Image 1 (cartoon, rainbow, N blue to C red):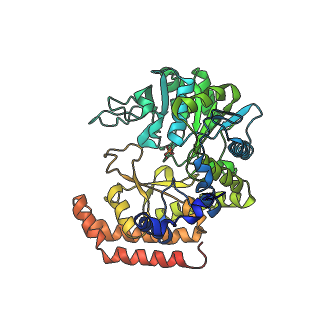
Image 2 (image 1 turned 180 degrees about the vertical axis):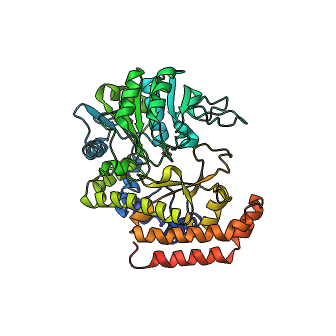
Image 3 (image 1 turned 90 degrees about the horizontal axis):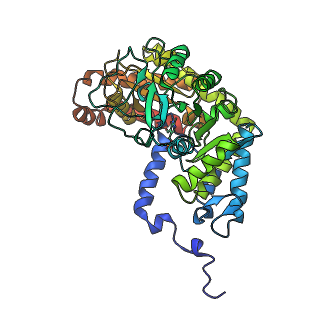
Length: 459
Ligand SMILES: Cc1ncc(COP(=O)(O)O)c(C=O)c1O
């Protein structure tokens, strides 16, 4: 055909020549990701094959509907892709025969909202873990400005600031961890759930470093006549590899993001019995969104196959070994680890005894080449925008090949940063920031880390 556009993509200039502005920003981000220790617990580093799938022609197709039942023509390849992705997810997580999978939700928050929309009426009650103790914002978070946490109460009733759709459209209460152990006290929780009578009980979160007793949680939910949603966004990869326990087949519904320990690109998966899944499928589309992001589904399919390989089991086990090694090395430098350690990929550090809190420590670490995030801790008494803790995780550095002995080095670097900045702990944040940005000691640590990461043993 004359003037054929069949080579449209190949003939066009590449990113560098067509859009140097975006290209330069991308290069800067790639450089940062190469030269720093990226230790945000919810992040990971995907393979080239996943990047190829995500950047593929799948992004050009609209495919509203379900496999074999689409609203637009030309979806035979997309049907094959989505079917394959669902089959891989089902196999990897060993779902019961009567369970089904949805891979269309655009991310973790819409996946949770789809479950609420499918199973609850507006105004019905969600009961999830208190945000400050490690729960997620989509588990019913709301608050009242100026209202302090009352440690004697196991329930947080929230307030007028309904910042999440999960508290805006539904009633919500949140359960707290035990003030002494910083763990879920299942007996106290059971009493609270029976008193509150939620329509759905939710577990999981962003900063709870310990395993959850899914059987006990399910039995508590059932006694209260509630559905049980296990949100395993953080530990999905550890569960797929058998390193952490699985709620699949125990909870009524399981949701997770695909981009944390599971090491796929961004997206979400929902699993449930087929009767519930019919409603959930409808809540995802047309309830909350139009066409699925087929390029994301393609990447997730590739990532799920990677997670089925024996190397992934080793990888997941190493993530946990690294997190445990980091926790004990940090304890050696007198950092207080919430709950005394971790069963997973993350640890939460209570910085109260150091007097330099999460916001300042996270900023100084970043200048020194370690990227982590400030975080609230159980019994938090400070503001979430300047909380007492720091959350740090090992999925990314484990992908880069780091082992337990390297965690000792990381703890040492972290301690050097803390020692250097402690004299500036009382400064206003902007003044502190200006000082640490120019601090030679931190620049020195950043170059040590860059050199360490460029060593042949690291990927
Ligand atoms: C437990 C949990 N659920 C849900 C989400 C939401 O995922 P997304 O950021 O993809 O909306 C997160 C994200 O960090 C999470 O940690």
